[in-house]
Image (cartoon, rainbow, N blue to C red; front, side, top):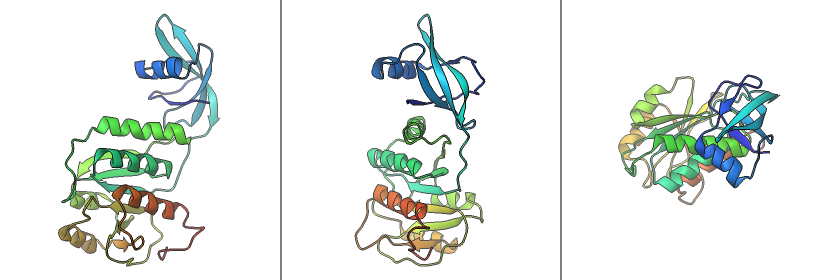
Length: 234
């Protein structure tokens, strides 16, 4: 069944108006009609079943009842240097599927400086949640410098930066992780010094140089399945 994010509070049979793009997608692309059911979520109240209703030219969803409680998950943070648009979109989509709870964008020394549309990136994250049956929404933060992101994160977070040509150095503590993925060209020497000063540990993911989006997916996958595969001194 189609899952739909609705940025509204849910009460039984309380009408929630659909946006024009949502109405078009449901009725023209997916060919749904009045009375058909969808699954809706708002990031706070779990999954609900809802019924489509039309009034004149406008479409609504009427929530019926909760069918799945709100998900809770262990904290896992992705700190992603700005890269070109398409690879960045892929990284955010896959990070959402892999369960990150926060995404911090970093204006790194070697970042690609393409214009960032935050609303579009947030919508991509929401769409990924709809598709992967996730009913909590990762928090997306606007771009900041590496130093500011490090300062913002709590001392109860394990900082992990991915090293292109270095080695895995340091042991994971039993803390929520924040994975720092560098831009094309890698982290600058100044940025590497910041990691060392912050007592972050480094991960090196093999003998080939990974693209930034690949590195993000690999690191998050390793973390997600850490109990099944004992690697990287976790």
